[in-house]
Length: 212
Image (cartoon, rainbow, N blue to C red):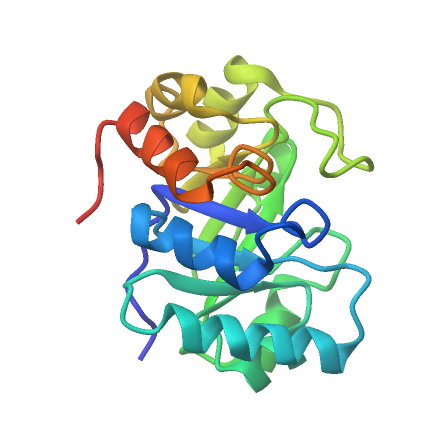
């Protein structure tokens, strides 16, 4: 059965930014401090390394209530036993991804425009990542930033729950939720900070302490 999910604070792990604390250490600190979902995104890793890292994360996050999502690779998501797979518009079609992972894994899809957001199929996709809201160095090839006004439009157009992404920090939380997003995804606001747990708690406090 597909797990229930909470997009409130969605940490996207960046291996280079997380290097000092480590991917697993960063994820655990964030989970214990209130992060609701964690995504493993490593565009440079081999399939074997991605799976090994994902399995270590899955084991470390067990019992925290924080779900693990894998970026791009359906094969890795299945091998890891991840809770979810997240794909971009250029990775594969959502229908193909769903056929590969089956009905019991959460599927997220990125959408950068109103047209793409409105085209998300709620029978296939569980949530959408909308953005980038702001420019961010953690993903140099991102599309043009949409701003909070753009986020509001995309959320309104999107038929599935949305998580905002792109250059977001604690101070942006009120505007993100006012725009209608169910959550905010962050990278550098937690990864690479001296204390990932403290950084997570600061964002949760800015959100308003949301967590079931």
